[in-house]
Each structure stands twice: as structure tokens, then as C-alpha cells.
Amino acid sequence: MEFLLLGLLLIIIAVVVLFLKSSDDTSQNAPPQEQPVQETKMNYIKEVEIPIRIEASENKQPSHPQRQSVGTDEVRLSKDKLLNKYRSHIPGDMFDAMIMCDDDMITIKQSDLDKLDEKLKEEKAFNKKLQKTAELNNAGMKLEKDGKIDEAIQIYEKNVKLGYPASHSYDRLMILYRKQKDTKNEVRIIEMAIEKFPKDVKYKERLSKVNKKS
Image 1 (cartoon, rainbow, N blue to C red):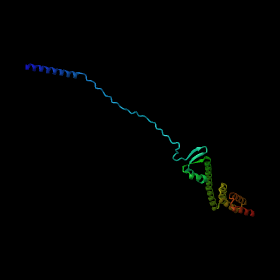
Image 2 (image 1 turned 30 degrees about the vertical axis):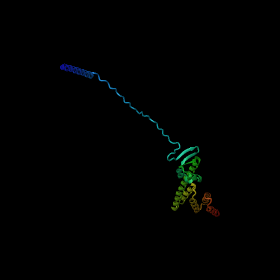
Image 3 (image 1 turned 180 degrees about the vertical axis):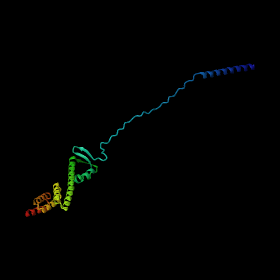
Image 4 (image 1 turned 120 degrees about the vertical axis):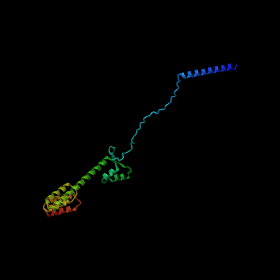
């Protein structure tokens, strides 16, 4: 009886083993199941160009402004430039206003600026005459020293025509014409000197002496 039970148990074990083996082969031959792919969500940052607008302030002045138009008869000028260029010609009230002003720029009428330019032009012409007069006087004195009296007279006459208010040429001509006994030209030069230097009485006195002798 025991042998019978043992044999039956072996048969059952054999059947179970065969079943498990068969089940394992089936699972190995089955097509592999696809694993679900988990999508990874990517966050993209979109680049956006932001336009930057730079505007110059309307009230901002240039670093070193020299001259700017303000109105039909007004301009703004650098105070330093105005002083450096027109100092000797700037009217007192304008000069005081410039000194009191803290701004580097000053507003001035175009007509006033034109007047300053005209005065500056006259000053340059005056100084040019002064330089030329000095040159001619020196040349005349050298000719006198060298005994070239007629040539010296021509130089002094040229100086008188130039019109600069210097008395040297008038004085030398009066003397030289007196030495040459040329009374007509002596009187002419004296009368020109009286007109040019009305406050100098010596020319009137000289004219009076010449007229008495003649």
C-alpha cells in the first residue's frame, strides 16, 4: 500500500514539474511587451527681442557749445568765448550780466553780436594801421639819417595819408619843408595836423608864426 501511495506521489510530482516547465517555455517564446515610454515634458523659453529706445534729452546741451540759434534775433554763445573774443568791446551792462550768470551759456541778440563783430573789425584795422605807421616812421627816420631827405618826405607823406593819429610824420614834414623853404607845403601839413589833433595848440601857434613871417 505504501509503495502504491509513493508511486502516486511521484506521478503527481512529475506532472507538476512538466506543467511548470511547459508554462516557462511559453512565457519565453511570447513576444516581449512594449514598455510604455514616459514622455518628459520640456519647458522651452522663447527668446523675445525687446527693443531699447534711447532718446537724448531735449534740454541737454552739447558738452562745449559755442553758438546756437535761439530765435530770429537771438543766439546762445559760450560765455568764455564771448569774453575771450570781445572783452574790450562788451558794454558794461552786458558784462555785469555775464559775470552774475552761473550758466556757461549766455543769450544775446544777433544785432548786438553784429555790433561787437563790427567793433572787433574796426579794432583790427586800427591796429594794422598802427603797425604800418610805425614801420613807415622808422623807415623815414633811417632815410633822414642817411641824408635822403626827399625820400624821407615821401615816406612821411605816405604815412599822413594812411590816417593813423600819430604826430611824428606831421612834425617831421613841417620841419623838413621849413628847411627847404617850402612854405606852401609847410602850411598844408600844419593845417592837416590842426584838423587831426584839434586839442594840440602847438600846431595853431606854429601856423600863426608862419603866417606872420610870410
